[in-house]
Length: 325
Image 1 (tube, rainbow, N blue to C red):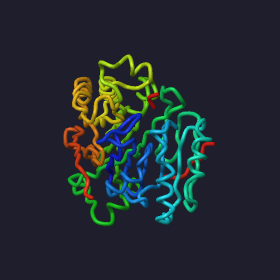
Image 2: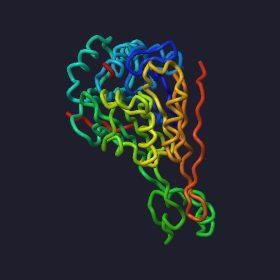
Image 3: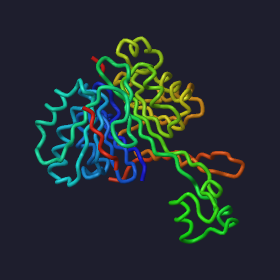
């Protein structure tokens, strides 16, 4: 299961229809909770998200709409006696804020604190890059290693079947048949989370070639002056980032309350500059599936399947590194 569960989509203040930030990425057996703003615990109930699903919490920065939901989430995890360790990643300059938020939570969670002060890997497959906001801010990128897709017709021609198929995959060579001879390259899936930033190299690096890009779209293009002042993206800038990066699907979020609950204008502006990327204006409690995995077809073309979005029904290895928001 790889799916993004949107818990909240508002920026500085919540609205009648949009809660503060909160995003759960379900990635196989892991659950990464990004930027839990105020009210995230309640949104989890509405979205059918169990506290047991969360294995890792990732904060881009310590502005309140991106972290004030942390005590409630941790308290719920303690109440539910979550048995597994939980890893919390955050910018090192926000350590005092994070420790204060953690201190008011109910004890009982096996919580590891992992501050980072520069770009690079923070866990197996998970890395960060610095963004350009008014305080220290980092975006996150999750990468699955590239693999191989077995081609049945080539396996048959080579006389490989049954248990020998597994042996070939493990060993890379069997009875003179190489794995490369009977398979094709399969790009790993990629996810990026880019929040609260002006356009910058870090955002571009995070978005490069991803299957699913979650990006803030705080302001409409007509309010580019405000976006520059507060170091946020406009909808058009988010679309341009997706286009330049070759992202397959762009999920817009973190909408200013000045546009009410309607993101139609913002999604239209992003779509106009997003190139071939599919554009989704996120709604609270929405579930967004990853685009189908790129698959090999004869002629060496990589084929793409559609992205899915719907409203919900009611192992990483540890690596430790020591106004508008």
